Length: 417
Image 1 (cartoon, rainbow, N blue to C red):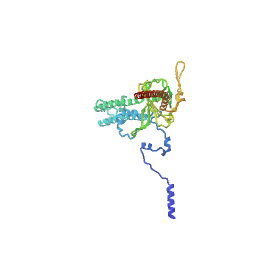
Image 2: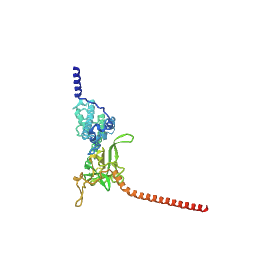
Image 3: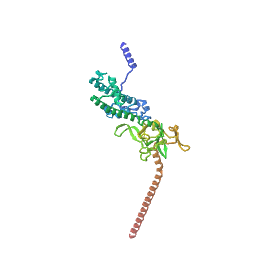
Image 4: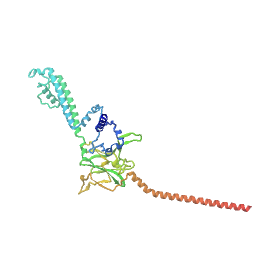
């Protein structure tokens, strides 16, 4: 009995005690290849953006071992740093150089014995009125920044001081050119210019000139225009090749008028960029019902030169499947006023519903071809029937001719007998 009670207690403990199952850590590709019925939330997983709506790329570089490559291009590295780090480095570089040369000036004065002859008018020091490290540090600042207050000056009895003065002047000029140039480039970067280049919140799919098209809208809020503006679009979607190779985030070009020149924009007022969904389009086989099931992202890139500075500017945005509206069009924003055109940016992102087939462009093309097939079939069938009738008539006439020839031959034989 006691053994049975112990066994039952141990079984209850085994049932009630929480069991932690440590699943093996699998690669991301292997986790994605698992059956979808394992986790019901897999079907509702959120699509991770490759490029955010504000244009920033959602990619982080990890496990970069060759960090020395950043130092080989130190200028670009400093320009790419955030402002707080850039300002910190700016202050630290000048402070360190001033302290370094101030220490050398103090060492020269100390080794020459100038510190022992402070106030001695018969002694000619290397630097007049230098009586400690603080005064040496101040003289270093005056020398590198060419302030020259006139109280502390170098004398002609100190050749090592003259050499140090030349070295500090040259190195100070180099430091000034490097740091001021870095700050100038960072200030004049056209990244903020892209803030006034706007993209529509949603992309739409509807019919245009009898063809199914994917469209989105771009606009420029400033009066100074973007020179030589051009637009590009990329489809970001993972794929698997016929050989079984998995390509994550494969990039496919979306034609937005490259061959016709429509990708080069005169961006004075908002423009609707259109992509015709044809056989070369990656959306050729996608219908309205299939679109929400697709895991894809459309990245749009607007490039051009800033009219004021001449520097190249790039603005980016993206659209995921939930931001692509099937059967909608953009609300017009341009109106004609008294002597000018006015753009209403309150309606820039607005859309309205329109009659659009729910079928894919491929299915629409097949339907159009089927609508033309009965006519061709009737013509061909009539031609075939006409040819068959002609052959049948020829065969009948040949048989009748043979029968007549046979009858004539029989009559001649009977007459001879």
